[in-house]
Image (cartoon, rainbow, N blue to C red):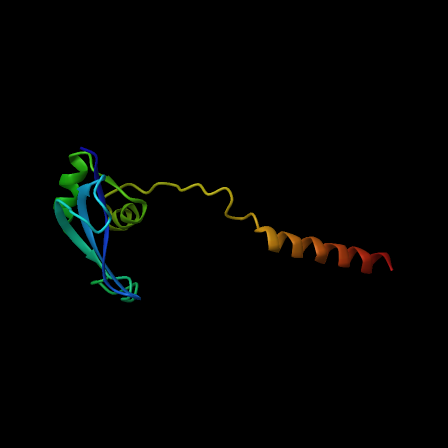
Length: 117
């Protein structure tokens, strides 16, 4: 059974509240889970101690059983010191989108035309 440690969304529209759960990866996001490991409330301030609450002993147990954390949960675990920090590579991060590239091209053409005068 492929296990995941992931977020299950709760709360009403525009008022999200997440449970950190251990579940079978084949189950729906908000569906059946095996164990609730903690909570995440994104509406609280980043320095608030209640923003992310986890039972780290149970999280380590599930990691030992082969459960894979999702990207967001992995970041939480890295901040808590449970997982080693990993370098994330996003090569397209600094590349501008289509519209911004077109604007930059037009701006360069105008600057070139002004320099030629």
